[in-house]
Amino acid sequence: MSTITIAQHSAQPLTVSRLGYGTMRLTGPDIWGEPADRSQALEILKTAVASGVNFLDTADYYGEDVTNRLIAEALHPYPADLVICTKVGATRRPDKSWVPFNTPDNLRTSIDNNLRTLRREQIQLVHLRLMGHGPVPLNEQLGAMFEMQREGKILHVGLSNVTRAELEAGLQQGPIATVENMYSYAQRTTVTLPHGANPGGEEVLDLCEKHGIPLIPFFSLVHGLPKAGDRLAELARQKGVTEAQLNIAWLLHRSPWLLPIPGTSSLAHLRENLKAAEIQLSAEDMAYLG
Image (cartoon, rainbow, N blue to C red):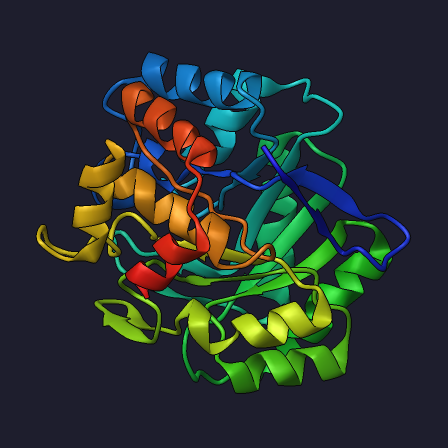
């Protein structure tokens, strides 16, 4: 697997393999509660890391706290090169809705909770997830994040679910290590889901490339698969791979600054996703896909 460096100009850069693993799907239905098969969930985490994946994406509001606890149970004490990235800025209500949790006190509570459940003294990378236009301005949220970075609770700060204007504003306030937006072959621009608008990766990719910021696509398999009969399906058929695998390969070839994190609750699908890193796409293939 090729690699990518997070916060390359900082005193403590992090180099990881370019295919990570997003843990969200390890939870129960509606991203809530314990997994249906806990032993398989633990095995997925162990297999991913044993296969060379050293970037895991999680959040304390997955479950709630389910994925963090699974990561700690499966992998602690952690390998030296393992990077665990979490998110703050949101929480879940008992009705399973997603709501902002982004005052400075909220963010501090979330960071302390992540440190406790992940059994870490410092979180290597934390994404501030933006949840629409609420009463807490971006500069106040980011200010709290950078304050905790100065305290040593956070090593690097990233942004998630951001528009181009929000990323530009964030870069004016301090070093942004990574960006995590929805992005896939079929879903490149803003899409509205039940919990709000999700800006697409294409809207910020050139800005990330300009500043050397890895862009981490999320939901690339859940919302990203076009219907059979389009060019992705046809090229997948020609190469003898699945559409999901070709979607991951397209992301890896789209830009060297992309770090896909396909998630799954199936060990078989994890192995399929990992094989996507072996798929070679020519310039002609990429031109055909568009």
